[in-house]
Length: 138
Image (cartoon, rainbow, N blue to C red; front, side, top):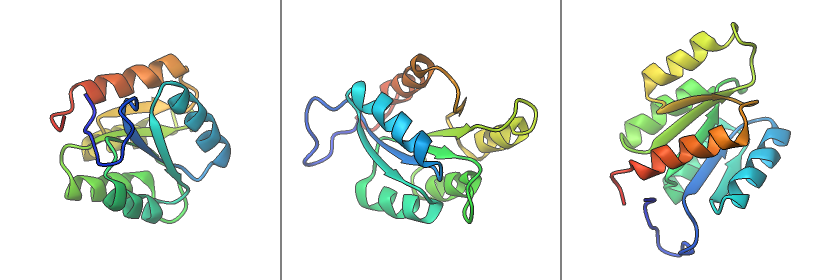
């Protein structure tokens, strides 16, 4: 079960922060997550994502790997230094061979799951449910 925060609606499944410089993907994932009952926060940069995480302490963070400035792997490193238990999902739209090493690096740095941006919504929602369901911070 998701961690409960002051002010969160009781019907919200999880608070999710999405960090991605692709505004189309932000809009798409927001729609998918909100339709499933999640509360969604979003930002287009790693530094803003870290600041928003400190302020709001979401249950799950979804971060793109390839972003200008602070990339997703650095976001994961910083999040893990602040909170060893937050659920982190690394995503990428790169080619099948091009980004596999980057996604595996993300896993080694502490991502709990890795997904491709083109994965079906059922897979995305299943990963979130798996991670929220095992969260020790209920």
